[in-house]
Image (cartoon, rainbow, N blue to C red; front, side):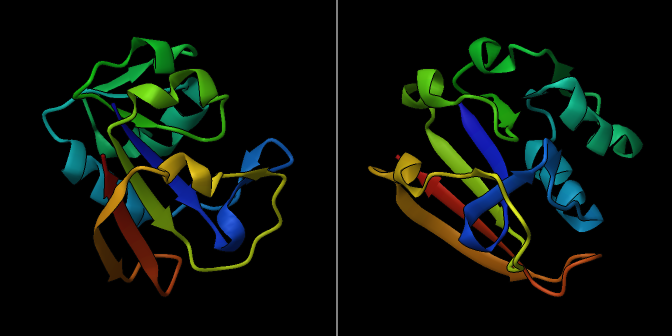
Length: 136
C-alpha cells in the first residue's frame, strides 16, 4: 500500500487529537496523484477532501487492514505498526513549519526505503511545502 502523511518540522502529525494544519494545494495534489486509484481513510480525514469531488475515496475506521497493494491511504496517526510491512511507498508532505505536536511520524518507518523524489511547491496556506516520495 501507499501511505500519504502530512508532517511539520520535527515530524509532527497531530496535537490534542487534531491535525496540525491543512492546505488546499496539498489536497489538490493528492487528488491528482490518486486519480483512478482507491484512497482509503477514516471519517475524520475524509472531511478534508469533501470539497474536491473525489469519487475514489473509501472511508472505514479499519482502512489500514482493508487497503490493497496498489491502494493509497491517507494516514493521520492511527497505529501503523501492525501494517508497516505492507507499505511499499511513503508520500510525505512537509509543512516546513513548527507546530505543537503530541503525535509524531517515526522516521524509522522509512528504513529500507529510498528517496525517489523531493519537490517543493507553494501551498495555499504555506509558503513552501515539500513532497517526498520514498519507495522500497
